[in-house]
Amino acid sequence: MKNLVFTFLGLISVINLFGQCDLKITTNTKSKLEICKGANYLVQPKVNVPSNIVWYKNNDVFEFADNYSAYINAPGVYKVLATSIADPNCTAWSEEITVTTIDFPTVELSVPKTSFCPNETVLISSNLTDQSGWNIQWYKYDVQIDGANDENYDANSTGNYRIEISKNECVRFSNFVYVKKLNAPDANFDLSLVGAKGVNLTNTTTGANSYSWNFGDGVNSKLSNPSHIYNVNGTYDITLIAASDNGCSDTIVKKLFIGSSANNDLAENYLEVYPNPTSSIVRMDNNFDISKAKISVIDVAGKNIEIPIDYNLNLIYFSSVDSGIYFVKVLFNNNQLIKKVIKI
Image 1 (cartoon, rainbow, N blue to C red):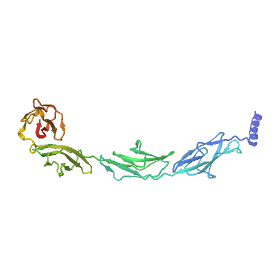
Image 2: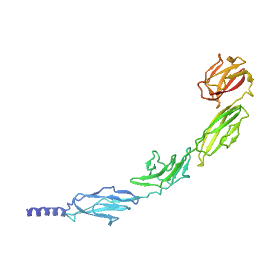
Image 3: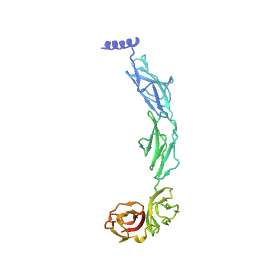
Image 4: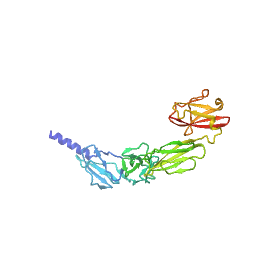
């Protein structure tokens, strides 16, 4: 048995002596490796027989490695020498690994203001200008924003925003930027006619403390609840701009129809409407052939209202409309007459 063992060992020695070393070494990476600056990349060699491993960097022994792994974090040319444990004369070199590092650009975010009104957006700008090869992704509260892959982002809601840049396995985030969407006033008002050409405006706006009115005839007011008298009949756009302390505002426009009998072509006694106010039906008593007239009903906004009109019985049916002020407009032989009707 001993003779058999010595014969086997002798055979191995003879094989190695005549160059029959079959040691092979590979690594888990490519020959050219681009790594993130400041990061550690684990490189692990593999050998086909038990071996001792020595790492080299730029042809010098690389001390920051053990037998079977090395954490590489700097540029250079790396290679591994493997020596068979069974035969010190049996050695093999790995393929050289050329390592370069990726330098991250410094990523900073800025905003012109940190709060904005509901009808606005705020542009979050990055200092990234020409970053070819880098992937960009915007986040809100660490959740990806779909489709946000440009250098800048228009934010339209409150939140913490930041940008991620990545290349290969390298990832870096910018600083967070917080922006807040402010509350805006909710502008609204009611209007009621006073006499033939007057109007009272009741402000029902919420969330505002300053008001700017335009009555549509060149007259303005800063009062909360103004009144106004028009000089000429017609349809007017009444505009209210309501603003709050935070700088946000809201605008609403309502139309007002002004008409009276004072300057109408037909005399006042040509037509009477009653009962007025009414809850449903208005009767028209007239001194002309009403069947040849054109009758329309208009609301305070100047809009024609579609309601039934019986020309044979001289009746207008207001039962289908809301309570409020309406105008009955009669055109007869190119003359007109307007009567105000109150629906209760």
